[in-house]
Image (cartoon, rainbow, N blue to C red; front, top):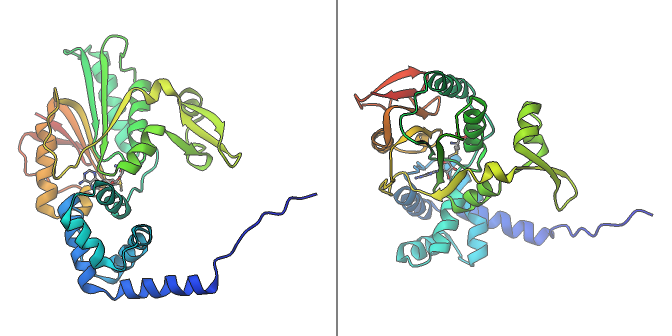
Length: 300
Ligand SMILES: C[S@@+](CC[C@H](N)C(=O)[O-])C[C@H]1O[C@@H](n2cnc3c(N)ncnc32)[C@H](O)[C@@H]1O
């Protein structure tokens, strides 16, 4: 006998109430502007006032208003400006960041990385006793894990040198997901079988569906931490061999993006590589780098 699943559809009243709230939020120009100013101050993300961004703000902030029982944007803006509630601030940042990513996104960069490592391996070009990588807008982890797979497949000699791999993001919720390293079948099945076999372990999730976790040995190779590209001062023990900062600068004003790129270049070792998103070119004023491929720069 099939089991009946109890499903309670939302009542018409609650749908109508939700719609009304959305409508009210969509027309709250002053509230939108206040929140847009706060998110820009906190993260650098710019949300110019237009229909698309108003719909985005209403859709993403509405659940937060409900959770914290704020009546409107202005109440939330006031609480954020008064400060002292880091949980609320993190939740606000988390709901307005866009975390879109996937394994081997903009895949030509991984070919450049593979060639760079293979060449250094062939020349025994590892003068220090560590190789340092920084993925600076790591989202839910697919990017740093793709970098890790590439480094290891290209033969980075991790028995002889320490791999020091930092992956950072501003969004604490997404960092937690990244360090857990769990992915659905649809994401992982597109990867080559050899990568799936070496780096992932299959398990059943709470809904008895196949899921894939990065094997703990590899998860432990990456240190996930919070770092705000526009506010935090880099205070790392050493410079990096490679830095990835892709598909986040597009959300910033040009001057802000250029200063972030300058800061990243200052954190590279001579000969190290900076990878930006494919559409994030034209931001380099710095003379200390030369382009070696599309949106890839080598520190001189
Ligand atoms: C669209 S995702 C890009 C992910 C990955 N780099 C890629 O290319 O697939 C942008 C990420 O940047 C993060 N982000 C936004 N503002 C940031 C800031 N000021 N500092 C650090 N990370 C930020 C977001 O939380 C989000 O995870």
